[in-house]
Image 1 (cartoon, rainbow over the protein chains, first blue to last red):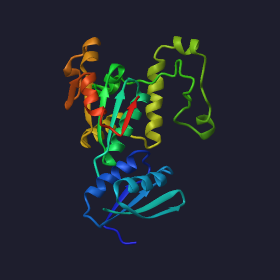
Image 2 (image 1 turned 60 degrees about the vertical axis):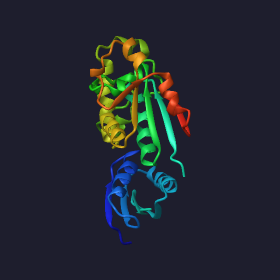
Image 3 (image 1 turned 90 degrees about the vertical axis):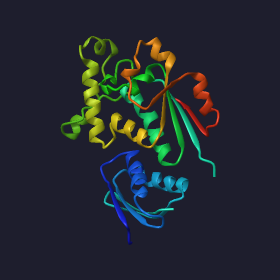
Length: 75
Length: 169
């Protein structure tokens, strides 16, 4: 998937992946896509909840070998 | 849609209890909540310039696992809990427990309290210190970080009365 910015939140725990994502989203334009890498298993539910509450769109969630990849489109 | 609001009363002054108010406030701010924390009684320790005052004590805290943050897995898995009477007579016990807790926090990629507090301030979480407790405990305003407002219960309710989430921690 194409993306405009990448955030490496691997090794970080709650709530840092969300806080860093919020910051990174502030640096892209509306409609652009942020790719997020995380190793926090709690981040799967958290990014879904973050998207639901902020109106940013979670395009996809994938897991491979304990690493999670999210694509989020800015509102 | 109206902006959602959250108010927290932070009343605890230990390293472990410093986490819930700062984690919830920074996350709420990231979700777009207008957020305020009212620091009162021991919670005032969380807004001191010097955060080294924050300790964690396993004494009288049966819920706290006492595990080492280093060494092989079998060693890390040992729980070193011991009777309160023994914990109480070991000099520097709290300092050692606090150092071990900080190492565990770092090992797990959990943010430090100074970092979380900075993130809250960057996100414009409003901090209010209870003026009555400041005086009661003999603190000076110079003991606290910049950007604090000082007020009382009525100040808290001015904002808390309009919130969607209101927590006492």
